[in-house]
Image (cartoon, rainbow, N blue to C red):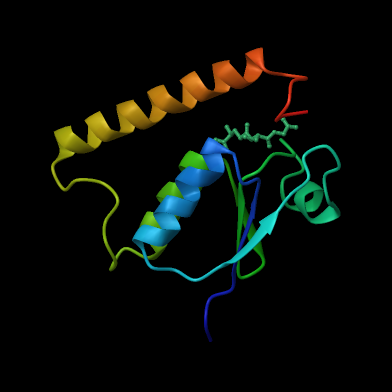
Length: 120
Ligand SMILES: N[C@@H](CCC(=O)N[C@@H](CS)C(=O)NCC(=O)O)C(=O)O
């Protein structure tokens, strides 16, 4: 049976974009659902009751939350297709450092924008 993959996302989100890039690198087909973050849908609230944030990947009915964890999950599940990290351990550590750095930068920018245009 084919995998059912649904991505709950919000198109300008850098966190969502990271997941979309990972899915594209792996050549995976998925259903994209754009969420209204000002009026969150019941599926988002059900699938991510802790943070109530996008992105959420729903794989065969099971939710995976937090973009870094989602990207790691995608890389582990579809490990036969285009590895997302370098094979060398040191280079992998470097890639993880920069991914973490960018996440923290985006989060701090979003914190400053709370209540502003994009994010409720
Ligand atoms: N640490 C989370 C951050 C996700 C995040 O901040 N998502 C924002 C959109 S970019 C969101 O859903 N905001 C809605 C809210 O804060 O209620 C991740 O990496 O997935």
